[in-house]
Image (cartoon, rainbow, N blue to C red; front, top):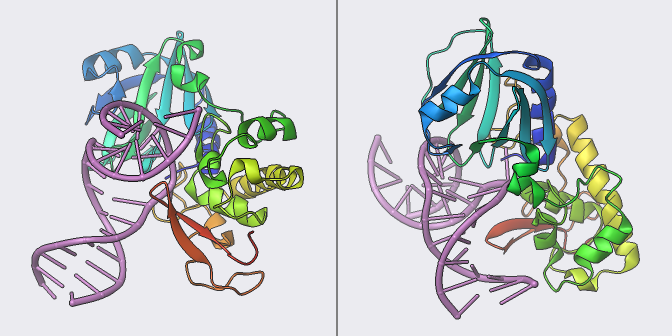
Length: 272
DNA sequence: AGCGGAACCTGTCGGC
DNA sequence: TGCCGACAGGTTCCGC
């Protein structure tokens, strides 16, 4: 599911509801995606810790705990964090319950079980985070960076945008939306792009991601904020999922093609 | 270096 | 109604 704007939305929700709370107990319902794999060890290490900060890097959520410990979460396709003050019955998609204080429960819910929860001693130790490319909404997204990452490659620009080691956080929906906004065909290769096109791409990456964060992300099927409300950006999508519908700019039917076994949507007339 | 394909799981939807 | 295939926002591993 979630790409950078959705993860950012979740992080903001968690910052309001779980920071400075103490984890009083942990219950693991299904442990195939947790590290350490042993539920007992996972539970034991977290119990008693206080959540100091919740932040994001790429599509990872980072819980910094005290005493010194980090919980890295990746939602993959269907992962969710839900915070509630009610005491629900365990649902079959609930993977882990984190009891916070005496009043609140933070639920990690994941229908498809692709999501991961990993305990690491410190962020420096988290290899996955070290491998990530730059944050697209930071000052590090420069024309030079895009030139270095994209302009020497014969891979398609669609694939390059999905490559988390270059720019971190863009997924399949926003890759299509960004390329439409920049008027670049997903079939072009990195080394075919002109400097002007790279400039447009940089602008579109930031514009689309910021707009999606403003709308609390996209809820195509099951993305939900921490309070279980949907995001609204799906109402602003221009090409994703619009196969055969008229392009909002020129009325040409939007095309769907498969690249890297994943759908790309684009306007064959506007995007060259 | 970089590609395609499969795998990890479960659910939904559309066609017949 | 029921079965079957296609598809789903992500990542990783394997073989070429």
